[in-house]
Image (cartoon, rainbow, N blue to C red; front, side, top):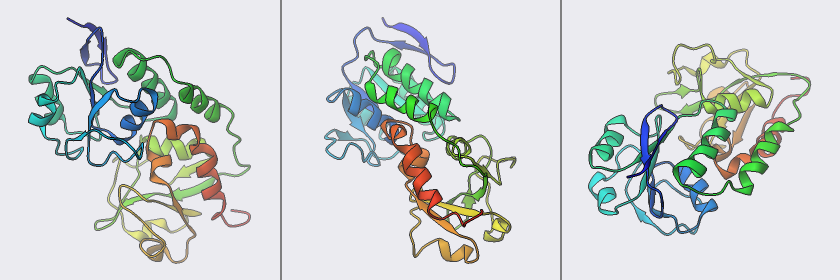
Length: 259
């Protein structure tokens, strides 16, 4: 029997007294666990790209994991996210008798707290130094003198963008930028490029859609566009320690003088 603890969604999870085998269904959490305790992970999705030398069983994607394969791996714990993973898949893993810990941060502060609980409570690990560095990086962040109105597309065909209550939106807010769609009734509304009229900057991450210099900026020809690292904008893990400085530099380089 394990010790009961509530995950980010309030779901009670029975955590084994000793955790030695973990499957991660979220790329950022894969990086967080692998960086903190190399060897603890036994499975991860095909999209889990960090650390680069990660050598574990791949269980397909975040939206279509191989449930039977995960069960066969006999993990002490499976970690997921309420947005990245389908509720039915997480429920199927619970029904198979596995402990499933689900994260659900919508802000930077929630992400830092979520990571602390994931690692200390769910994985039974000591708090890592990189998490302290991440908290310090965000606590000491210097805000720009002027706010910048931004639009943040995340997909093309159809066009979709960041709306309300998103982690990435809070990242930009903490950097002094205002998401023009923050008041949208949807978290990821469909848009047309002309919705960018009047914004100061279009922010184009390289994931989930891989925007590039040749694919994305041309749709907003009259508005400056900043190509940014999706890992630093949307991931919550070790990348949080360097995200403020990295994103601030990428964004500032494209903001017009006086913008």
